[in-house]
Length: 110
Image (cartoon, rainbow, N blue to C red):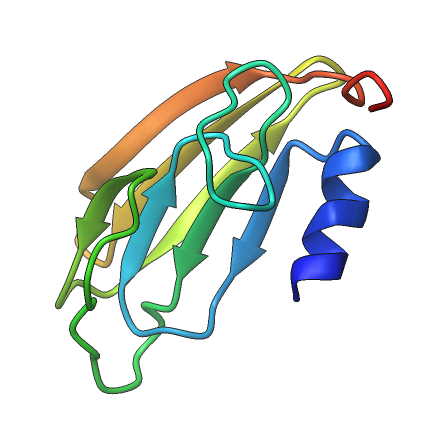
């Protein structure tokens, strides 16, 4: 997956969604190597909270901002031309995580 992340980063991708684990996790914008990059990084969400059995999150990665375990819910994204917003909403309609960020272009060539 490393090469794919490099391509996405070079293209200026803002957000990646994953649903392979059975918990919710949000990461700070980061490089393909997992280093913080608030200017050009990719914000990653893991939203695997749709009804299957839950897994416990293992060791948290350095850029992990929040982990919610044992909660069924959905992530709601609002995408705009220059920004995006997110909410993680549980089955009781309680917003458990939310935020927004601006979009960026591709990083300068190296």
